Image (cartoon, rainbow, N blue to C red; front, side, top):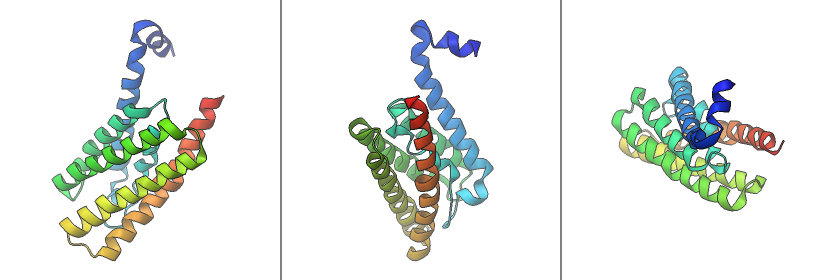
Length: 174
């Protein structure tokens, strides 16, 4: 508590967003690596993707985008899909993170804005990971790769991401 109050005062206050980005990166990477048995593959539920709507919340914004991209980059080092997953996963998170941030700039804190963020994240993840990575690069049948990634994204980004984001928005209003 004392450390936080010391940081949150004066000129050191600008460190808080950087600390948030680092925390998001560590949380994402750790969760993905610990749950790697369900985080990779044609049918995957990457629980850490519940963090993906965070750029929608202005308090996190672009720092959340940076944290998510770094977290994915670190987590995907253990991916069975190697360098392709490291690069494509990071690009995917960068794209949907920036779009979520832009939507948040205009629509925060509306539920419609959050649902739009979640829909674009599921669509982008399904395209880049399900279609490009798994189907095009690794030749996994299209029905399996698309439906497996989409189902996992609906669970992690959709349901878990929605619940986490709504909790943070409610907490912020207090």
